[in-house]
Length: 102
Image (cartoon, rainbow, N blue to C red; front, side, top):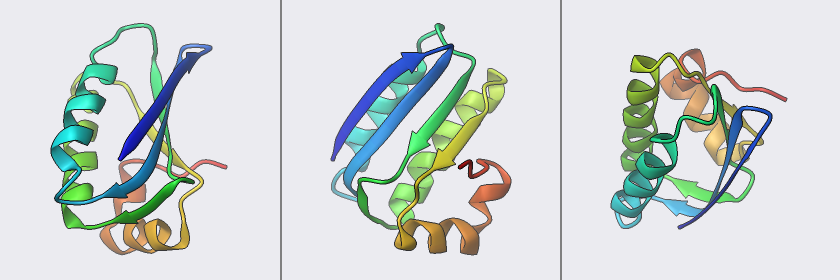
């Protein structure tokens, strides 16, 4: 798992690259927590265009980050999900808490 990020116009853009599963969950969680600890942004967009696989552990990582940001009143949006990620987000209702944007 590789994570790219940048801040532009008070938005933190995060691109998840690779597989978000049991093997990459700890690295992903710690990296996102470090990125999300900043204060130079007022919303987060997570780009899933380079995410090749995600399982229930990955869902847990994203929900945990959502809860942390909800406490700070910073919304998280999802963009460019793969067909696999799209199916998971629809099945689990994740789009209700982290809306998909185009």
